Image 1 (spheres, rainbow, N blue to C red):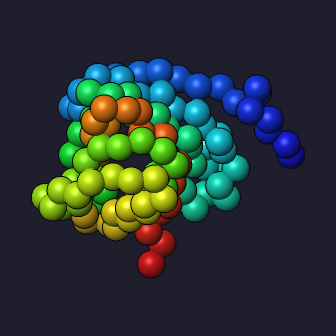
Image 2 (cartoon, rainbow, N blue to C red):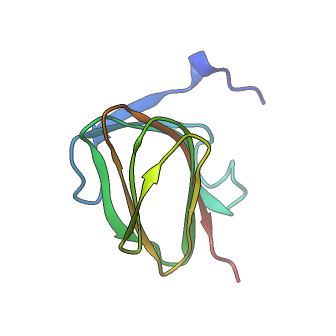
Length: 117
């Protein structure tokens, strides 16, 4: 299967988890079946300046962000750090995180995998 960028649908929506502003999500794989039931999200996500995905805790799954561009702040279980292109942030099961764009949009790949241990 080939899914070209012009065929990838996107959704602009309010930032989740009581976040602020708006995000844009382009689902690169659509659903559990394309991920062989090992996860539920593989997406190119944009967090707009002044917007934030609110703090949330993952249960029985992990989430990884790969930052492609932009600047902001990442909250890793209460420890806040700057976001830079090329950074990878991993949030394991039972852990929490949030991300906020500051000054310019954050473009990132988000991957949520189930904890099957």
